[in-house]
Length: 316
Image (cartoon, rainbow, N blue to C red):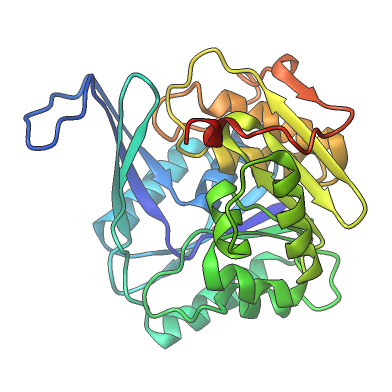
């Protein structure tokens, strides 16, 4: 079983529009509402593919009630932790070229007792789990070492830890030596304090995070695929996608697929890339399932060309 912890979940409304014009009146051609937040997305993807998972997250207000209804409709097992304020409602605007404009609310302000309740619920849910994933931003009022404190209590248990967050919360989590962290390119640049233009620089920056405590780094690179780096190896893979519809949740699908296949090595990387490639062809933040994952689009390379310029940087 894979447990996810999402301290700042959201109800996500996605609008598809022909063009995005600031100050204009725009009519959406399609709209969908999904339960959101990194860990929530991971549990949704895992559940859709028949992988046992439990999502731990706070609920409050009308958005919290809608979150529970949406996850019940998808059959996702949950451990909701009541809080006094409402959780977030976010908006994504997607144009035909796949470009996503996101408007994210700040989220609720936590009381100290609510933070303690969330940590306690996460600890209970992790009993017997194979992996626990702590991910996303932190709500206001929650200390920046939240993930580290929530997970260090696992002690010498057999539960493996995956972290997908940014900035100080990620740096704080390195002290518990997570089994894998999953930064994207921008997050990798932020935490390594360096611009990254090539695959070789991705590997170098990832190794810097391993030196600081991570056991492995799964770096998601958007159209360039992903790199899995450990202390003694680096594996690069990519996936061909004919048309990108929405990139929302693609990184979450990458991590979900990776963990579903064991969370180690080239086989897990390939599975993660297949799930991510499927996710970007789907509307809104819909997660892939066993029926729409095409593993034939994935290529795992025998070696990494350190001088290969990333597609995201070639246009700069």
